[in-house]
Length: 466
Image 1 (cartoon, rainbow, N blue to C red):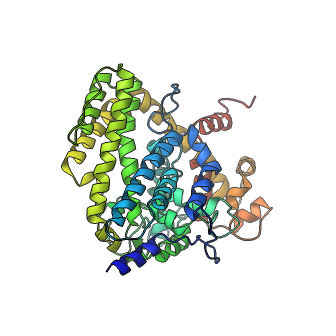
Image 2: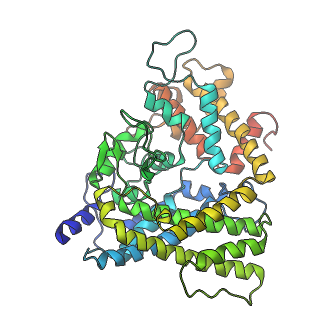
Image 3: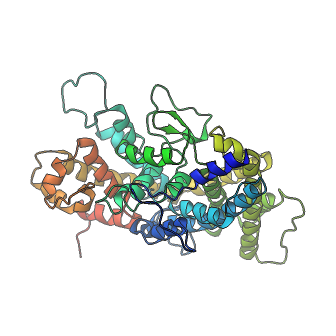
C-alpha cells in the first residue's frame, strides 16, 4: 500500500509542463515549483492585482488589502500548510519533500485570484449581468426572428452567463501569457492542479451540479480551454467522473484553506482598521478563533491596533493547525477523489468561528454604503466597456465607430497559438463569435479598477485624454 501511495503522489506532483513535449528540466536545488512561483510573480497579470479590489473598492487607505496583498498573504499561509501537510504525509510513510509541497501550494495560492476582474466579485456579477441582458441565449431550437445567438453550444453560453474568475485564472496562466504557443507559459500540471478548486466545465454532461460536492460549487475552465484542462488533469491522474469533470487535486484543498483563512481573518482586520467594525469587537472575534486550541493567553498590554495584529497572527496559526489536522485524517480519501468538503468546514469550532466572523464582516464591511456605491458604479463601468468592445468585435461589418474601437482593442488579445496574425480584421475573422466575446472579456476582466474607470470615462466622453 505504501508503494502505491508513493507512486500516486509522484503522479500528483508531476513536473510535466502543460503543452510541452519535453520532460522536466530541473536537476538542481530549484524545483519546477520554484520556477512556477517565479513565473507567476513576474507576470503582468499578477502585478495588476495591486489595483484590483479585495473587498473595499478604490480604497483611499494605504493599509487596506488589494488582491495583490491578499494573494501574497494567502501564499504565505499556503506555504506553511503545504510544509505541515508534507510532514503529516511523511508520518504516514509517504515519501514527499515538505519544502516542495510548501512551494507548490504557495505558487498555487499566488495565482488563485489572478483571474478576478475589476471590482472584485461584483465585477464577476457585472459581467454576468451584461451577458444576461445583452446577448441572445443559446437554444437547442432553430433560431427565429432577430439576430442569431453567438453561442454554438449550451456550454459556450453558460461560460459567459456564469463568468467565473477561477476559469479566467486558468485561462490567463495557460493561454493568455505567451499566447503564441500551446500551454502559454507552461506551468507544471501539479501547480495547475493545486490551483484548480473547481476542475469542471460550466455545464456538466447529463446532470446539474451536485451541491454536496465542494469541487462543483463553481466551474474552473472555459470550453475554449477544455483541451488544456483535460491534458493537465489526466496527467495528474485525477478521477474523471463524467467527461471533463474531475475530482480535486489533494493540494487544492490546502489552497482553498489558505484562501478561507485569509479571507475571513484579514477582511475582519481591514474592516476594523477602516472603522466599519469596532476594534474591540474584532479583537474579541479573533480571540475566539485563537482560543480554539487550549492554552492560548491573549495579549493584554498592547494598544488596540497592535493587539489586533497579535490576535490575527494567533488566529491564523490555530486555523492552520486545525486544517492540517483534518488534511492528515482524510488525505487518503482525497487521493482517491472521494473527499468533498473544505478543510475549514469539518471541525465544528472552526466552522462556527469562521461563520460568525464572515457574517459580521459581510453585514458591516461588504455591505457598507461606500462599498455598495462603488460596486454599483462598477456595473456601469464594466457593462459600458463590454457594450462598446463586444459590438465592435462580434460584427463582421463594423461601422466607423466600431472600427475605431477595434483599433483600441490590443491585437494580442486576438491572437491564437500558431503564426502571428498582423492584420487585426483577419485575426478577428478567424475566431468564432464565442471566441471573439472571450477576447473582449479577457481584455475587460484583465483591467485594474483604476484603468477600467479611466477608460470608460474617456470612451464615454465624460473625460477626455490629457
